[in-house]
Every structure is written in structure tokens, then in C-alpha cells.
Image (cartoon, rainbow, N blue to C red; front, side):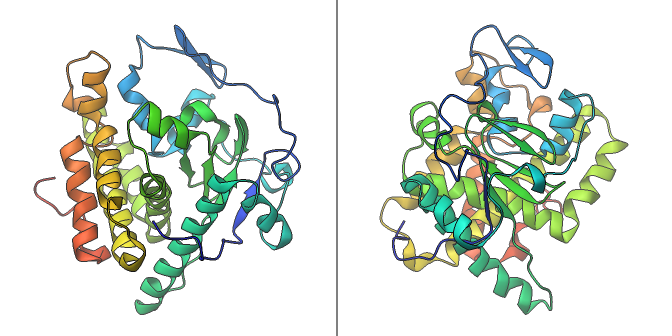
Amino acid sequence: MRLDDYRTSKNVRDQRGSAGRGSGGRGFRLPMGGGRSVGGGKIGIGTIIIGLIAVFVFGADPQALLSGLQGGSVGGDIAGQQSAGVGGSNAEESCAIDQKSKFSCQVLASTEDTWGPIFQQNGQRYQPTVLNFYSQTGTSGCGQAQSAMGPFYCPADNGIYLDTTFFDELATRFGAAGDFAQAYVIAHEVGHHIQTITGRSAEVRRLQARSSKAESNALQVRMELEADCYAGVWAARNAERIEPGDISEGMAAANAIGDDTLQRNAGRRPMPESFTHGTSAQRKRWLQTGLESGNPASCDTFSARTL
């Protein structure tokens, strides 16, 4: 994806030490053995199979996920815990740390320039999300951020949290290499921000509060697929920057993180009632819907009879 000449966003915070330098071995990485220690609780592979890491990979709603794992702790003075604030030279320095950081900042800027006019056409003002870089561990309004969780969006502070080493894992572990696959990840998280702004997220949480587990999961699937579609809308509105092979990279990423594919790759029989993000076919279909229409109105997965 051609973003070399694109501006970098100023809506950036950095928790990687002094604007990303010298973080070294600070923090910790969750063990990949028999279990993961998350927020003080032990989550074994036997309890959450590798396939369900997808819940964290593209950030369903860590306000619910993390608060549950951490005993309900949500919030805190996040701004005071950042090593670099939003905007100005701090943001520029953070974006210039390395190529992955720069590209992430450029993608975020592109989403701002895309969604701003869309909201304006509807008589609304788009308030951008903030991209929070961290290394291994960080702090969010939804609890502790950990690199093993993958990128996620936190509705409590309207922030996206990203350890850029995830992009290496995306290529090696999930077989989804390429810059457009990386851009898709960020655009999907921005999609969750759109859902927070429009009230979709709050509406779904209210419905989930009085739903069974299976019904709650089904609602979450529609949330994720809508965010996939929003990512497609963003890409469609930036078609002039799409290069040959980009769409294939995005589809490969969508396919790799489908619930059914992840569960099969983990040696388990796919269990539709446990799906929280949708099948590979569904994720590709809704990403394609956004790509073909370029219209957010086409992304209403909650009105769709079939996914």
C-alpha cells in the first residue's frame, strides 16, 4: 500500500520508554507454555484454545474481556501514565521510531482523512481515536495491555493499543504478511471506534447483558464483521493507494483469523456457538462488502439475515 508520502497522525501516545527508546527488557511477555497469566488470573490452553486468541488478536471489546480477567478493574488516570502525550513533537518522534511505527501512524492518519468527511456528510464531527504504542506491556483504560493479546481497541479511553511486533507474528504465525494486512488490522480497530462513536457498541453491550452466552457471542460476531466491513470502506475510499496484491493480503489476513480456521489449526472441531469473530468466509465476505461499496451503510451486519 502506497503511503510513503502520507502524513503521520498526531493522535499518538507512546509507552515504549522515552518516546520508544530504551524500553529494552522492561515489562514481560506472557509464557507460551501450559498457560497464560493474565491480570493475575491463570488461563490455561485447555480452557482457552489457541483458536480463541482471536478474541484478543483483533480486539473484540477488551473493556469486557480485560475487566473480567482482572477482577473488574477498568479505568484509571491513563493520561498520567503515558510516557509521551498526544500531538506535537512527541507524536512525530514516536512515529519516526521505525518503519512499522511510521506506517501505523500513516494508516491512522489515512483513517482520519477518510472518516472525517464521511461523518461531516452526515452533519457530524469525527473525533479520532488515539493510537497508543507500547512494548510488551502497557496500560489502557481497559486494564493492562500485553503483547500476547495483539492489537485492541479500548472503548473506555477511545484508544487503540499496539505492540508493533505483532506484525511479525501476523506474518509468521498467521501467514498474513504484507503492509495491507497490517493496515487492515488498524482499520479494523478504527472500525470499533466508529461503533463506539455511533452508539453501536453500547447498544450491543446492553443486549449482551441480558443474553445467553451463545446469544452474546452471536452479537459479538456481528460487531466484528461490521468492523471488518468498515475496514473495507476505508480501503475503498483510498483505492488510489492500493497496489497489486494488497487485497489478496487483506483477504489472507481475514481468512487466517476466522474462528473456524483458528479452531481447526488448534486441532479442535469448530464450535459455532463459541465463535466471537465469525468464520473465515464471513470475515472475507464483509471485508469485501466494504471494499465493493465504499459505503458504511452497507456494513449493517445487525440487519443482515445471513452473515
